Image (cartoon, rainbow, N blue to C red; front, top):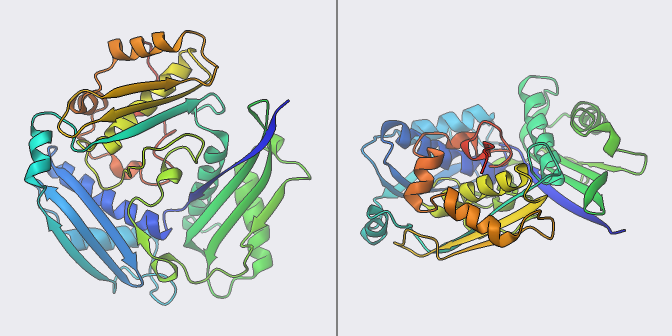
Length: 369
């Protein structure tokens, strides 16, 4: 009998890195709304009461970036520069140029915009075919945002992190060992009230009762008060939460971030496609766990390699799984874009609480193959 603990974390939309991710994806979506062939690679940096945006855009669209950025910050709920950032007064700097002609040359002929490797993963631990720990961490973060915005816990502020440690027995989640929440709050918040309400209105509303027992540890704001947050408490940067965005560390990662990149960037589009394939390998009963890898060369259409690992849970040979993949799916950049319809402005839906496991996203569709 093998027992072990595994931990994953998530963050709310007000975390400085996620603020930057959402700004970058909002810019991407606005360009795609106006021109579906837009090529966008935009990074956002946040510090103190200042937002800096840089990157490359080639598009027929015209976007009022300053107005868009202020609206994103407002929607998240940041209104006080003394403790986080204020959408009305923050400084916004923008430095956007056109895509490099060298990169464009490879993309124009249908090739990958860069070299690199991407991973996809799925397992049967949850109904959405995601690892249990990251699913629970995301659900806690989403619940924190919900109770803040609907006024159920009105003293919460936008910046927060969650963390869940799961005890596994024979490769199956048995119980939750630890739940950790660190949430920003207003200056006058009573800490005992905070702990009680987050336990009752967030943790107990999210975590299934069967996974909690009298040995489960709950930590809420373990360092004490958390008043200063957002970009005032820590700098934010697009693409710095790649493990939160994917599988919570339970599967490997190629290293490329997602947010702010259009689908010609295989860092994003190929990772989405591999998630789709891995999920359907598990959903179709070919394995209980599946990890895939592909690699691309800049300007090249076809992947350089395809790798499958089912961790010994496969019901058919892995070689046969690869054959099925090659017969069913076009893994060229253009093939992926067309199959998943990735020229649509859907990317702000992906930014928070994971890019995978959300049923309304095209790569989460279950098919037969």
